[in-house]
Image 1 (cartoon, rainbow, N blue to C red):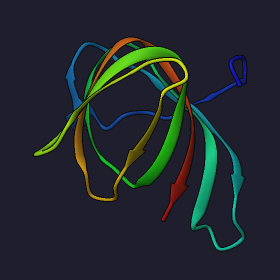
Image 2 (image 1 turned 90 degrees about the vertical axis):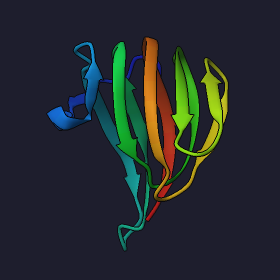
Image 3 (image 1 turned 45 degrees about the vertical axis):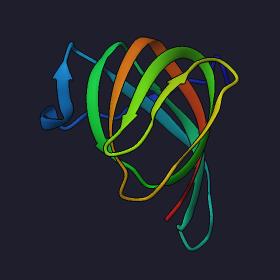
Image 4 (image 1 turned 135 degrees about the vertical axis):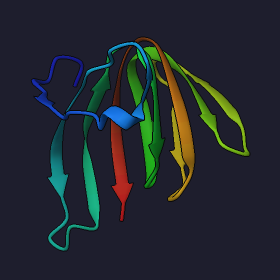
Length: 106
């Protein structure tokens, strides 16, 4: 996973708070009904906002601070697991290019 080839996933410019973050990723598996997705996702340093899906992820490399609106502040790095809930509004401050393995339930 650490060296998987990823494909560009352009950010909506309205999500970028600061910097010039670049997102890449790759879907590794999707359930037949499309409601479960597993893959790899990467973002370079910068600050972005997002509205989350139900997601479990494990950080493969890099570091970030994830602020959940009205909730907690998560400091994540290699080996850390995190759960985000559908509808969570977040701000990601990416300190070092972050790569994660994820499972999303739609």
